[in-house]
Length: 162
Image (cartoon, rainbow, N blue to C red; front, side, top):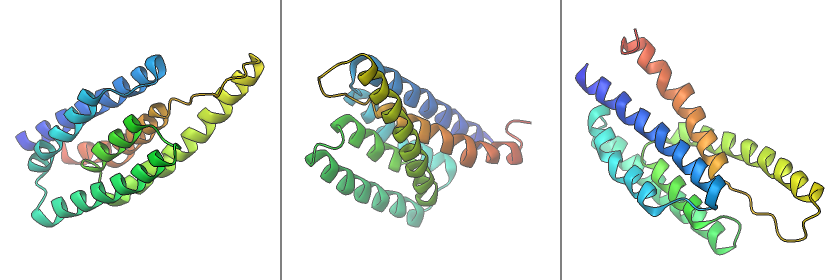
């Protein structure tokens, strides 16, 4: 039970970190390296508290490497910002592979809506410069969705939330 409480405390901290990432991306169009590093460094604590075995940790590391490779290409093509790549890579250390696929789907939908809304706002204000989309918001929405839908129900069934 103590490990479960610690796991959910770490997941709560991850949710707060995602909100901070979204907020800083809105305000400054930047996701701080210290925040991405803190998310990545805390992942092994979560693995321990969640009781992940070596095979599961191996899958998390493989997912993380694949995520970094794919999104680094997107960064090189100037489709995605560096902070977004680092945030997604750090999240891949936490989120199980199938749940990470759900995160990517929700992120894509949220990013599409965000792009349409901000693009419309940009056009309505008759601005001629390139619109900058704070994609950290979409990443945070995807991450929070997965935490709420994939991880929170386990807290209810394990008795942690009553």
